[in-house]
Image (cartoon, rainbow, N blue to C red; front, side, top):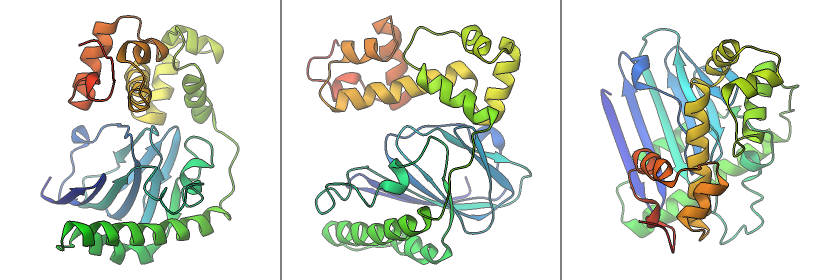
Length: 269
């Protein structure tokens, strides 16, 4: 990365980043436990979100809710500039307990209605990224400005219909339905009358990840949600399809950089 301006305060992270010659190896599929606003400024790329492929044009805005897998696919190594904002789903709960502002994130199928065009928010994102005031002023600014962005998203979302799912999206949705079951790639492929190799190829084209890497990451994010709600680490691992706790523990630490006990009240250490 050739340039990065990043601020992380109060659960809100905002980044302005530039790669003069982006390397595809440095951009892989990932899943957040927070909402994300991704604002594309320049480059030659596509954005993959849960089986949907979105062409990126100047001022494209992508939204992803917690647990929604996404990645950038570069078509050529042109200058790649973007803003990204991550924040909790609960950000506006103090004045919007019904989460009406968050409906563009929550009230839609997985991987659908992620793409918007709202060029006027670029100045807002720049203001947030480069604000130098005290923490209280920063929190107040971030909350009010992001609430305005959510309002604009909501108005566009009502005119953004859901299309019929493609075969790629059907693969992804089925995997999510079966996520915590005892599954294998062969069993998943059989459901679509595909070979394991055909299923793997189609799935990786759709998500940017091999099936089992995707499944593991999704299970870990779901387990983290359970831990945050007060579930024990052992129970969270079992519910999310991890039959071996030591496997879950190692994968969790590697993925999140912290122990499950950071949230669980009675986790096994």
